[in-house]
Length: 145
Image (tube, rainbow, N blue to C red; front, side):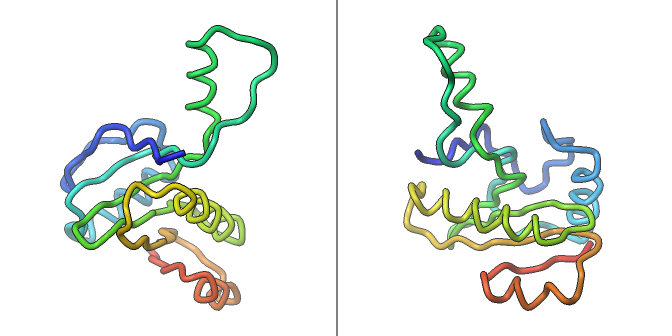
């Protein structure tokens, strides 16, 4: 299933993205205050993959809503002419953040929106140095903010 992007936002967007946690929002503010982001458009809370199965035979509107809310969701996707960037915002990140990004990549690549390349970026305030080699093995870039 193709990613469900929702509405696009300009790279200068200064509001609070819907569904972004308070911890993630602090990281987002730190990231955006470092300078302009290299994207043409931003998307928040991007759904990827299939939603979870639902029991019974609910009405179509309930089934549709369940599919949307049960799909894994990416914090931020940046788009530019050369490709896409998935940004995972995670306070005090650890192995779970690496796992989330690799799952998002797998789901994205299973039905990508186009053939442009995809980059993975972990945005965090704290990251164990003994896990940095793991990031390189799965091609994830670390940004400490």
